Length: 143
Image 1 (cartoon, rainbow, N blue to C red):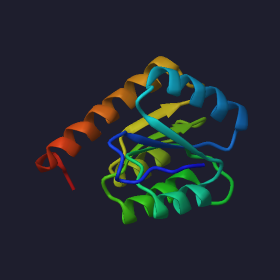
Image 2: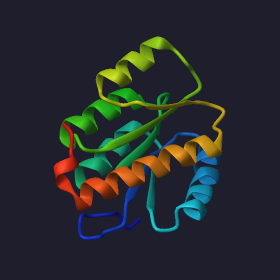
Image 3: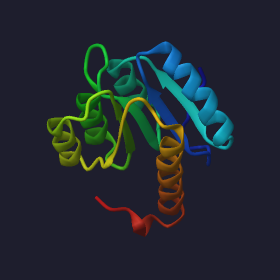
């Protein structure tokens, strides 16, 4: 898999999902909806962190419930390395404890499964627009 570096102007997404069927279907749909976005995959949190150490991803879409380290721990580690990374978090659970942990990390995009692709695509579209605004006007970065 060829991975994204800063040399490309394309917005890059890392999709972290342990359910192979969900990953494949959503990746196909996202690629059709966002043809100018580069989408990469990881099937667990450890691989997600590893890929983010070596590459620049503008947006990470992740499930919370992953084998090994969960999506929240993965997000915390990635945010500590690359605080400008945007996150969209998916979960089969709508528990307040998850929402509080995500809020502590500055992550506000959260969807409960089953995934409504219209809502997911709107979240992705909003984050892509944010990335492009920040990329071309760095004074907009908020830490």
